[in-house]
Length: 291
Length: 291
Image (cartoon, rainbow over all chains, first blue to last red; front, side, top):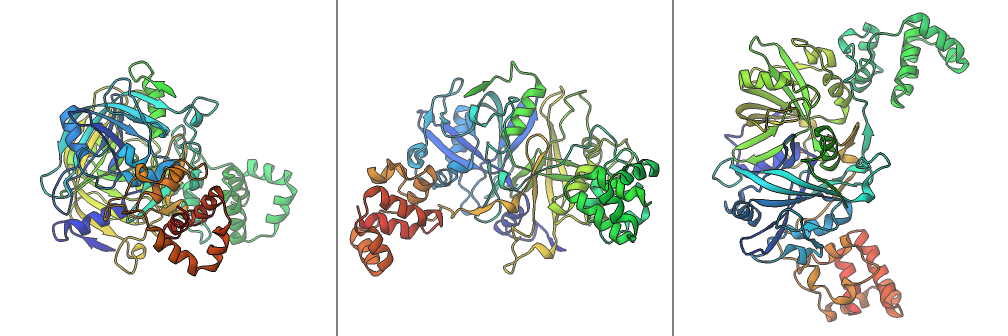
């Protein structure tokens, strides 16, 4: 391991390491107005949801590392205590990036990026019409993390109203995770398009998995199974009974023939094919029949 | 748009909407110990970096929506003021998920998930040996967002020491964004594997882009270009001069022949091919030669 001591490395270098390590980071496309009502729009990836009740989103416009100045968004949030946080999908990522240009004060980034200003219902800042989800928020508090360049400022946003484009909602009324098509920030110039890498992991909450420690030794120490495989196998309430497994296996000719003469390694490899397809029940039946 | 008023919908429903909207969320795989030194390990997706100087990471173990109880991680962080935040890559996602099982107090999730306990240098909680990046942190403060089910608790973690696996570092000493292979949390049971959807967007900081508003009308109003295309085109300091563009085009026979008799729509479609490949300079030369 390479060890990095924040008290020794420069802020710029540490910043790079932290942003390369923590991600992908969701993007708050933050819309504010100044005291005269002039709009501002800028993206921030020090952002997330932190509470559902009360509904709190936090983003952090940090003091610039290079000259310790602050961003218009922070100044506006301090002055007016209102912000609209817009979610960024793939269709607007280039325009969002353009809006992060360091335009002078009073320049409207909605105009510069060609995005549509939509009036909010409860706050003065405008919504981004193209954004799939928009949060109208009041700013409860702003907590500075320090006073030097690179210091974050937590803008604590309480959601007053949430707007969801009906085109991204599924038949059950939930936000469709493919259709929302979120992008997120990574290190360097990298972004990721979330729906290109999606996979499901069943929640382990309803049952208490036996745990990897309770797996039979030959499975736990197998050269065939990865950590992910063991994690899947250990997420069952109890080991399948051998009779039950044999009963299942004997009814499936293809499986029965395949495992009849197989050695343990071959059995594990065969079971792994089912694990890879998330047919964990079948993988277990194969393994248990041979335990 | 569908409008959701937090003061009207149930916390559970609002929770689902917010988690479906804000993502992908990076995962803090948080390791703590109780006052007797018993280890605990649990993942949290209300997490991000919020400051580089001082280096502050925040995660939020929320009060459970269903019964307003708190998590062992929160209790341990309150009691000992120390935590190790481990980054989750694809190789350990199943074991991480297993560790989020609601095991009873005193059960060691390192053992249950089959992950390796590695001693830390500056704090008592253990690091996850398989994790590509580990942050040893002291807890500066814990800020409750409320007292009801669904209320977040901001665990403000200051990084004392950061450990990076040398296998994920590139030749320049930076964290390789493919090799770190982060996973992140989305709505429902969905996760995303960041490096499957990666793309680069050049930072617009060094130059002030002209903005979409300054693009020539026929480009801005073209039926061919998407918002992303306009965003790319608008990220230049000034429009290319026509002579310069003609000079370039006349030297490229394939381009010259292609655009000689083309109508504006055909020109835009031809330029778009270069935009799609991020050859923005060539796209501009083609467009400017015909302006």
